[in-house]
Structure formats: structure tokens, C-alpha cells
Length: 417
Ligand SMILES: Cc1cc2nc3c(=O)[nH]c(=O)nc-3n(C[C@H](O)[C@H](O)[C@H](O)COP(=O)(O)OP(=O)(O)OC[C@H]3O[C@@H](n4cnc5c(N)ncnc54)[C@H](O)[C@@H]3O)c2cc1C
Image 1 (cartoon, rainbow, N blue to C red):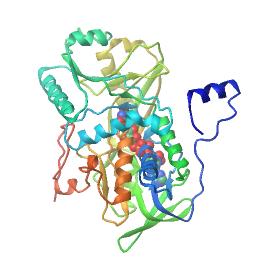
Image 2 (cartoon, rainbow, N blue to C red):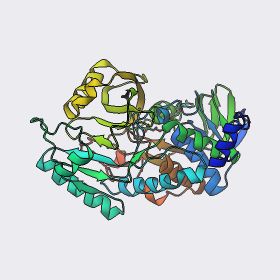
Image 3 (cartoon, rainbow, N blue to C red):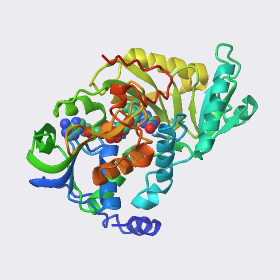
Image 4 (cartoon, rainbow, N blue to C red):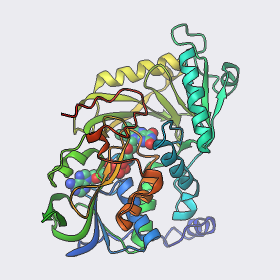
């Protein structure tokens, strides 16, 4: 079933009776060439690119709940490529290029909207850092523009420029950054993978990983044992738990991140805007809700819901930056489980078990990575070699301390022994 403008009009005029399910709800077979644990964005994209780029279709994606019920459907949908450090910058640059052709590639409307992201800065030191970051982004081949307070007043008239505590000195704009409809991304990749022969198996929790003489043999699930030549762990917030099934102890902690949405309003926020003096960022969805988020709850947890102190903290930051937000009614809030690494950068790598691969540690920035991660992970699983843009996402950097990518500058501490 292909989508097109003509098809939408025809279906609309004929009672929408011609649409078919987007993917087959498969039942598990006894064995597959590749089993992917986790039906989130990264797992589905890995399956899609395994089939599309490498012709590997005897693949199952095992999802313990429903497809897209994890972080891929819980994030604040920001897509950008404004990373600073080598390793991250080329990876996210590659991912953004994939985003730019994704809808045509998947024949699916993921509502990718390149509305621009503006990261505000509030003092001289932050301005210097923004210029440095902007130059690095441009050297990488992506776009970055420095905005003066005068520029900002024209494009973001609703900010509180008069506040004395955190005066706004300017902003760094990436025009190609923006948002996408998160669950449509999961559905689009699911449909593309299923169309190519991949089995998508929902309500199928992996409970064990079978290893024999250092080789992976398959998995145990709530729907029986499944043999596999290769197994990929792609479970984001549950990474530590699933990797433990293979005897691995990961340098990952799971933390809750919350997001909030208001009632639908007329269009008032055209960009994605982030505050430089607190963890607050905002955009407006196509339905009109103001979508915003803040920082982690700051204690390890597997509860996919947040707590009130962080909600208060986020509201305070929002009111400081744009007091107009105080007039909007908050409609919903939710939480997701973030797979936090010590240096804030992800992992796409082999493990010490032959045939067992790991993808995770996306922290709170893995939505924008979905196409790039799936592409690179599929390359690694299919060829056994690292895909160049993701070549630095090695697991052993946390063991050796070499190649750490502390993008946030928050200072990872590694006690080797
Ligand atoms: C509030 C919030 C805001 C965010 N905002 C942004 C943003 O603006 N931009 C951005 O780039 N990123 C953002 N992120 C981060 C991004 O959503 C995640 O990094 C990314 O979605 C994680 O990868 P995933 O989609 O594969 O994860 P998930 O969708 O969580 O997929 C993992 C899947 O594995 C399944 N699973 C777990 N254990 C098992 C098992 N034993 N057996 C079978 N299946 C299992 C889970 O059920 C889940 O469906 C945000 C996250 C949150 C929570």
C-alpha cells in the first residue's frame, strides 16, 4: 500500500475503506538469522536498514509491549545536528541527512518539520562557547548562525528580554533542525521493515539470552525460545537489565526524563527554543500544544513517570524565559526511561559474545539519532565492521578511558580500578 496525495483524496471520497494494516502482526518462528530485542525507534530502524541496505530479511524484532510504546513515542521530537565533538558531530550530521530524505524513503509522512532550533546564551562565556560550537558545526558541513539580541527580538518576540537575572545575549540557530512526529517515525520504520519481510512480534518479552561457548545461540522469550545467528540488544532504558542476561555489566544508569504539553493554542512559537540558563526547551506541535521538557529526575529509576519537584523546576524555567506561558493550561505530562552513559554519548558496538551486538546509551538525545543509529547498527550487524560515522561509539572507551566524548562538558569520572 503506497501513500500519495491522490490516494488520500480518493480514500477520503470513498469512505476510507481501502487502507490496509501498516504491518503484519507476525507470530514467532523457531529461528532467524537476526533477532533484534526492542521495538523502539532504534530497533525498528536497524531492522529496516538490514533489509533495505543489506538484503537481510530473515529478521525478527521482539518487543515486550507494543511497537513505539517506549521512548520513541515519549520524546519531545527534536531533531538536530549541532553537536560539537568529533565522533558525535559526524554521526548526527549523517543522521540529519537521512531525516531529510526519510519521508520519501519510507513513503510515510513523519511530519519532519525543519523549523529551526535556537539555543539561547546569556553571558559572554556562553557566547564564546556558542561561537566555537557554531564554527565546529559549519566545519562539519552543517548549518549554524549566530543571532544578536536584535535578531532574536524579531523572531522570538515573546521572550522576556528585560529580565535582569538571565539577560539574553543572543542565540545559535540551526535552520535545518526541527521536529518530527515521533510515533509516526516508529510506524514508518515498522511498515518499511515488515514490507521487506521482517517479522515484528509484539507482546514478546525477552527473558534470557542463550550463549554457548562464547557464541550467541538465541533468546528465551515469553512466547518461547527463538534461535538466532545474531542478536542485537536495542532496548534503550532497559539496556542494563537486558545486557545482564548475557552477563554484562554496562556503564549505563537509567533515569527518568519528563515532558509536558499544554492545551492547543494558536500558532505562537515557530521554532524549537532552548534556554541557556536552565534545562528548559520548547516547541509547538502541529496540533497547537506547547511541548516542553527539562532535566532528569536525578535518581536512578525504571518508572516511566516523573515527579513533582522536577515539574516545578521546569515550570519555573519556562516562566523565567517566557512569562506568557503562565497563561496556558497544562494538559498532560509523562516520563520515559533514559539510558544515561557517563560521557553522555552512545554505544554501537560488538560485545565479547560472538554474534551479540549492543546499541544504547542514547541519554536524552536518541530520537534524532534513530535513522543514523539504525543505519550504522545494521551495517555493523551485517558486515561485522563499524560504520564510519558511528565508529567512535565503542563500549571499551569506558574501560580504557580513551575516546570518551563528553559532549555536555559535565565531566565524566572514570575510576578504572
Ligand atoms: C521526555 C523525553 C524527551 C525526549 N526528547 C528528545 C528530543 O527532543 N530529541 C531527541 O533526539 N531525543 C529525545 N529523547 C530521547 C529519545 O526518545 C530516546 O533516546 C530514544 O527514543 C531511545 O531509543 P528507542 O526509540 O529505541 O527507545 P524505546 O522506544 O524505549 O525502545 C526500546 C524498546 O525496547 C523494549 N524492551 C525493553 N526490554 C525488552 C525486553 N526484555 N524484551 C523485548 N523488548 C524490550 C521496550 O519496551 C521499548 O519499546 C527524549 C526522551 C524522553 C523520555
